[in-house]
Amino acid sequence: MKIIISFPIFSQGGAEKAAQLYLSNLQKKHEVTLIANENLIYKFEKFVQLNKAKNSYINHLKILYKTIRQFQPDSIITFKGHIISVTFIFLIRAIQRHKFTIIMRESNDIVGYSNFEIKSKIKNFIFFKILKKIPAMLCDFVICNSVGSKKNFCKALNIYDNKVKAIFNPTNFIREEKYKWHEKDYDLIFLGRLEGQKDPYLFIETVKNISKLKPDIKAIIVGDGSLKNKLKQLIKSYNLEMNVRFVKFSDKNKRIFLQKSKIFVLTSQYEGMPNVILEALAHGCEVL
Image 1 (cartoon, rainbow, N blue to C red):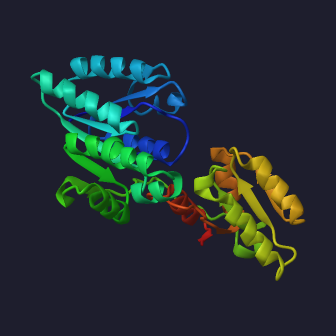
Image 2 (image 1 turned 135 degrees about the vertical axis):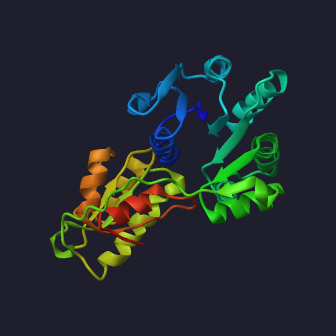
Image 3 (image 1 turned 180 degrees about the horizontal axis):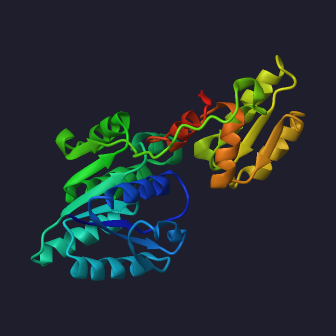
């Protein structure tokens, strides 16, 4: 089977990690082409044929159209940018003879996203009725990465249950526990983007509360983001500078500090299927 994966905005996060795992598994039995922007695309060169697009939707759609004509796919899976990508792909399929299946993968719990990120009724209407409902109606199938996300998707958009499939994120994690519990350096670990969705403030509050009972608690924050300076100020105001350490996010740091930590704390306001829970368990962390 020939498969195109369309990923117009490729940065760094759970959806990108899921795409990497999709690619590494699909290419074992199928011919796969990835179309993505130039950010971090080098990570996939060992997996599949690549079509690089400069960082804009217009360039992405040009490459997508060209690839569809040349590659003649059996299926196209879209990651992100669904209102543009799915609509564009649907129109191409409508005007050309070659038919293929259009699959939209939704990485978030759309109800959780709406509740936390969208504050106005107008924006909420646009989000559900335009950005999500239209591509969901135009595509053939929708993939959600958890049963709960699928349930919320179908209910919020009034989509038939049989059109939406719950497919958990593929994994390739090998259980790797290098240290025994008493040998680990950190009691708690936060791993993720330092942004509102991940709620790192709650992690700091947790450390603060535990420090009242365990003054020598050691915690580590592995991540980067717009809230980093504010979090450091909060830690200073709580006099926790000796208790909490920051390190930059990298795959190497993620692996090292998960192995050195006892408990991973997930503080997110909403998630689809967080890969980080699976990674934490694979590296011997308890998960809270």
